[in-house]
Image 1 (spheres, protein in one colour):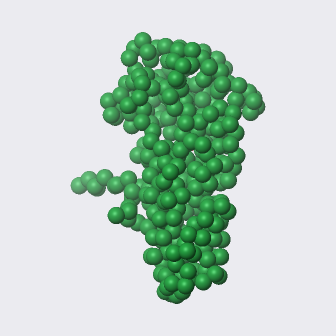
Image 2 (image 1 turned 45 degrees about the vertical axis):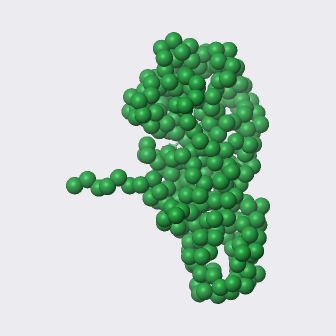
Image 3 (image 1 turned 30 degrees about the vertical axis):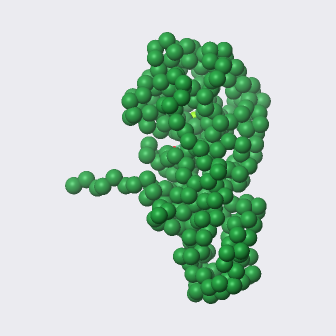
Length: 314
Ligand SMILES: Nc1nc2c(ncn2[C@@H]2O[C@H](COP(=O)(O)OP(=O)(O)OP(=O)(O)O)[C@@H](O)[C@H]2O)c(=O)[nH]1
Ligand SMILES: [Mg+2]
C-alpha cells in the first residue's frame, strides 16, 4: 500500500523543525505553568526571538504587541505560540508575493541570481519540474558558463523535468547565450525561459557586470524582460542574507526572493528581517532537497510552523 501523499503544511513543519524545536523548547522552559506574564518573561521572549535571528526590531515589535495583549494575564505555552504566530504572521503577510510564470507574457523570462551555493540551480530545477508538470513548454538556460560542473548539474535537472536545455562551452559569453535562448524561445513558442547564472566569477564586480550584461541583452529582445529576477538566499548563512539582499537588490534589482535551506538551520527566523529589509517580496521557500520541497511562501503558515504549531491556521 502506498502512503498517502504528505501535505504541504506537514512538509513545511518538518522543514522548519530545527527552528521550531529550538523555539518550542525555550517557550516550554520559560512558561512551565500558567502564570501571569511579567517583564522578566517578556525579556526572555524578546531574547529568544533575537536568538532565532528575527532581528532586534521585529523582536521588539512582537514582544511589545504581546505585552499589550497579555501583560499580567495568565498564559500557557499554547496561547504563547498562537499569539507569537499571529504576531509574526502579521509582520510577514505584507511581504508575501506570488511567483506565477504562466499568467504573464510569453515567453516569460526568469533570471536566477545569488551568491555561489545559495541554491539557484536547484531552485531553477524544481521550478522547471513544476512548470513542465503543469504542461508548460520550458527552456532551461545554463547561464553559469563559468564552471563545466554547473552546466552538467543543470542539465540533469532539465532532463528530469522534461524541459529543453541550452548551454555553451565553458567560459563562453553568458549574455550571448541568454540572447540566443530568448530568441529561440520566441521563435519556437516556449512558455517560460529559466536562466541560471554564476554565483561567483573572478570577483564581485565581474559578477555584477555579467548580470547587468545578461539583463541588457535580454531587454533588447523584450524591454519588459526579465519578467522575474529571483534572488536566491541561503537561510543557513543567517544575517549575511541581509547583506546579500542589500547588494543584489541595489545593484541588480530583484523582483522576488527565494529563501532556501530553511530545513538546514535552527535560525529560520532570519526570513523575517530579510523580508522586512527587502523591497521585493518573498515568493518561494526551500525546505528540503526534493522537488516538492520548494513551496510558495505563505506568511501565516510559515509563522505557525516556525513557532512549532502543527496545524495550519483555522
Ligand atoms: N537542505 C536543502 N538543501 C538545499 C536546498 N536548496 C538547495 N540545496 C542544496 O544546496 C546546494 C547548493 O545548491 P545549488 O543549487 O548548486 O546552488 P547554486 O546557487 O546554484 O550554487 P553555484 O552554482 O555554485 O553558484 C546543493 O547541494 C543543493 O541540493 C534546500 O531548500 N534545502
Ligand atoms: Mg548553480
